[in-house]
Length: 236
Length: 378
Image (cartoon, rainbow over all chains, first blue to last red; front, side, top):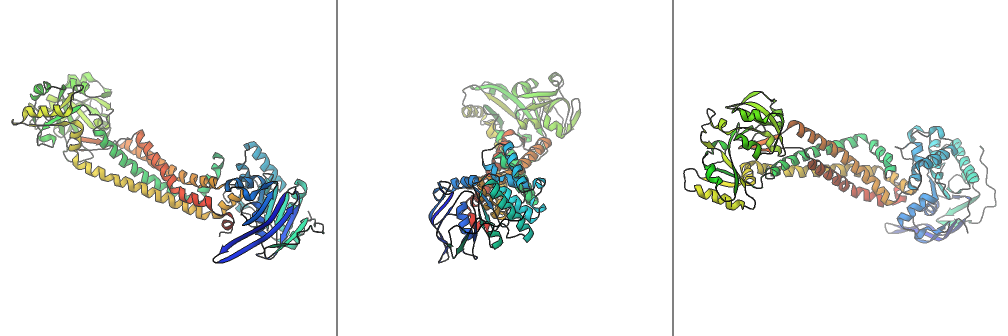
């Protein structure tokens, strides 16, 4: 059984009198440990697909089964807890809480799980070490560079050991050099920890690091078959 | 919920000025509210310690200066069915009108001061009081206000006494009184009180009907040269401060206004906090915070600001009340504004209620926000 299964998922909403369908009849399966990238023009439905898989949006129709759980059937509160346990989210604009230090930002998802303080401390330490920011643990977002903020975001996404990490344009706000570093980090985490990554990007170079590259066009998945090309390894 | 305390506290600190101003507003409003409450409590206290007592006053007289009832009425009143004890009292006050610095002398037989009053001497000696005709015992509140000490000789108006003791009482208003010998006040030059008293305090026997006994006492003197007007002590005291009662009841509206003001302050601050953090709350939901938890976080902030400000205001009010020993008197009756545990608890209860009510709508809105659209909010 695949880790992620989408069955004819459609998302529609009304804008005034007009019906907008950012995603139509999407069917997809993703295996555990895969790194999948989604590319497409603006408005093609990439972020919508990501948001549906991450459980922060609800489809209008269809089913999404993740690790055996049909998340479309979960209540709002159960879905929230499901997200805490199963999904990490990396944002384009980092979305760190400005009043919390790097340590406290990374710790946030763990506060929702039944865990002792000592265990939380250990996990946060490991997550910050993974992204190379142990010495910045007590810095606040305003004291970090863009790349460092994104690495804190990545640490926050993986600290709860989720099955899936979704990344929405993780390098969209970074310069070329920093983008490479972040992409290398994501690739390394995928290989070393076996976390399934789903990444939306406009950047073909970023998309190329994924093991499977999918395209969306006007709300529909094109080329859902596995990519024949091998992923591009980012320089260290 | 305590594991989220750093987040709640830091979120409040993020807009430190706004938080401080809201808390300060809450403090000022609860300070006023507590003061109003103390005044109301003081008024309610008038009737609390006098359930089984009557006051016999001269009919159609209102100020203690003008009530002159013959002292020999003591014997006949004592024989009225239902009467357990009669205490003749001469009242002298430095100001018959409403004032914050009223001094009231109560001249009573010295043995009656100890038996008819629940006084606890904290300084001085009862025997010194009983031995000397011009001796007085003073309530602690009045002693502090006028800076009096045992052994000191002092004058108020036409009366000069020597302080033999300082007492405390369960009845806060009592601590604004001076007790001295009845005959001393009667014979004081200028008071023209020989053979008369201002009032009789009548203690009822168990099971006696207060109204019936009052009626029986007045009937004895109806048509005579000095007629009496007998009422229960609570009614008498309330009537004596009748004008003040209207004013004090009006201050209730001031108290309600304070509560409404704090509610608006806290609600505004919480609404602003939620509007500032639409994306942040969406982020928290993305991380797995449920709507209920977001609600609790916002509510915690609202409650904390209200509680901190309110607690400071209440504490300050209690401290001022305790230190200033304020009381207002008129026509020989005193209303004390005293701090109390119940006042503090009422204030805290109001503060908590305001924090909850002020925060519930913005908290609910934050909890129900749509994640995707909120993440795009700028």
